[in-house]
Image (cartoon, rainbow, N blue to C red; front, side, top):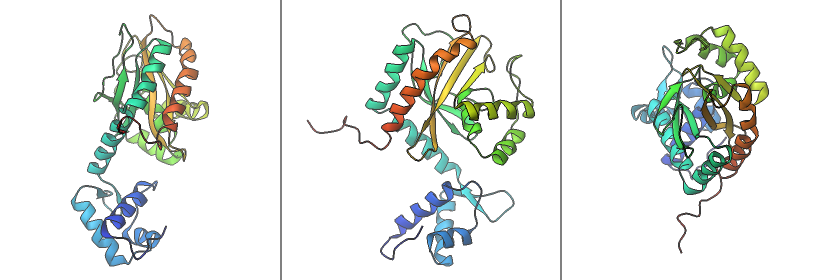
Length: 261
């Protein structure tokens, strides 16, 4: 990636953020400068300004940089706002009506699943994930998809760093067991939970991907096991996958809702 001489300071700052956010590990100022064709002093100045604003932060004990907490929060708000647009919310309404259960869209922020939009079935029952609610990574379907899509080494490092609390007798808290489940999830392309977060509630989720294949969010459903068994979750997979593809297709499309009459 190279920046032309006509690019301004804001363009360069966004280029730094884009580059750092796209890496699988923390990067040095020299790596940023080299990849963006920037003079090293310029890279240091931009990094310092972004670090001061919480958009970048140093990896613990190093001089390498990763995305900062404020950038992560901003990204979460941006994704949430995008999915609450009329067109995308309508997709969520349609799939909820088709399967007759509450559907929700979740993202991962600060190693938690945060729900940014949801549509309830006509008679809501069971676990309700309203926008703004959060849940652990390791015992939710969305969290399993997120972790399954990480590179193997990053996945294992994350799992072994998580404090995993047993919420029910079915909660998977052994890292090796969870690693096996995540590999199965990666191969299958969707995830299920079997009363792992709340007793009596099962659920599943599918990924919503950007055009380049990166994970943006997940589309999921949670239902009482008294009405839908863990094995019966399979019937939700195809409707959820179809809706996820529709949501993905709208990512780069302009919404019509604000168009002039």
